[in-house]
Amino acid sequence: MARLGHDPTQFTAQVLKVRGQVGSERVVLELLGNGVDLVFKCRGQDTRAQPFDAEIAATSRAWDILSGTTRFRCPRILSHSDRGGWMVQTHEPGLSAKKILEIEQDNPQEAGEIRAEILTVAGSWLSAFHRAGPVERRTIHTATMHDHADTTLASMLTKEIDADNAAVLRALGASIATRVRFADTKQTRASLLHGDFVPQNLLIHKDQITGLDFSAEHVGPNAHDQVKFMSRLYWDMPEPVVTVQDIEQDIHSFEAGYDGSISHDPAFGYLFPIQVLSDLAHPKCAGQRRENLLALARVVVELPLA
Image 1 (cartoon, rainbow, N blue to C red):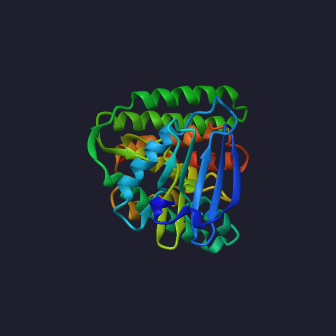
Image 2: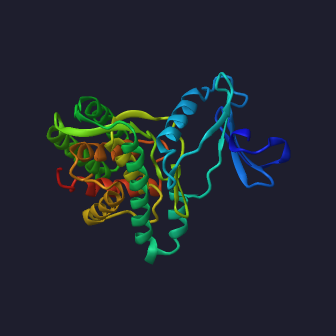
Image 3: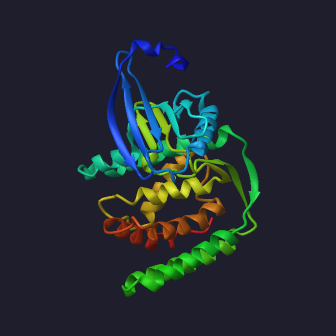
């Protein structure tokens, strides 16, 4: 609290939420009297749980990158143990992009406009994050991601009993192969990546936009963050996206915030279908989520090459 300019002895902490996870607990504290909220994370009783060292370092880097802006934010690490067993960070206000989309499902007439606004907001935060640090031109080497896609596809086809779904997966695999050949050795931009840029890790509160959970942060092609947000956006939609025009409009909305061409980046072109395939293979991709991503897979193959 002293780091925030407050005397910690003058306030009483009240537990607002306890969110249990494997190996850790997440407790949100409100310090009564001044409206400052904190998040406390600890490893819990599972001694096998990984310490928070990587998350502490990554969140601190993100804070340094974004601290010069007022609109684009991330939590600030206030204190942590020497060995990373616990950490305290600011609790940022707002609703996640995922939650906003869930609320708007009851209003289908405005759902498309809300999705477009969220994509533009997401693009603007990601652009600020990518461009605040070093940005470099990098030659695309597709071999690793292509091998991953081939392995994932082969495993999925051995388990798929629906002939129509199997045909969709094979078409997706063929499209990936074409896009890999097109993208290999071309140029793309690379920078520090969020690493898990998904709708639930983006908070929106009035004019402030906050990114959360930087534990997967690393350096790589910017398209990795872009395609993950785009693919995960469709997970919890009430109805599948059915036309290539819908996808192109969503990409355009994202580009409007990112302030730069995404659809013409060859890295985006080959990584988008690979991300869709990876998400289809995710253990949590079932029911409506699976239907949504199968529909997405059917139209992603129709997107033009960069």
